[in-house]
Length: 171
Image 1 (tube, one colour):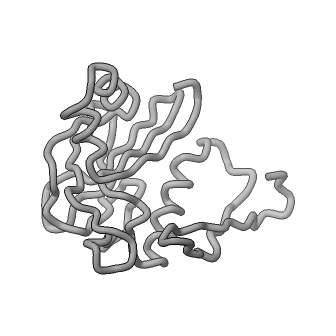
Image 2: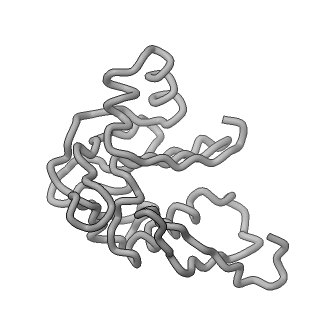
């Protein structure tokens, strides 16, 4: 909360920290991540960006049910955004929040109720990460424009490469 940026994702993150967690776990989840656990298991394996949000135009973010090479993202958490925060992704064909963000003016945080690494279409995973990075960067005009490049996999874990497309920037 000293000007940093934080992205976290995972099925059961809210269930573990907010529902079952200790007092300090709940304080972290609600106070720092700025969201509330609403329920366990969205019952679907996809989400869509909301109009006007940071994932505007991003549709069909499908994550693994165990048949696409990573692991089954069982029980993706449902959240509700706190006052002053925004919902960014909704689970497909539901009214349930999959991802919320906060910009406190001091720090920015983005929390998703499903594991980012289980987004199984490479192009979609790259598109989502591009939106995440754009949100997390400072509000001022960027010194560099990053282009996400190749995605490689080692033991089922994606690795991203980024290229600075502004040669004048010192990144």
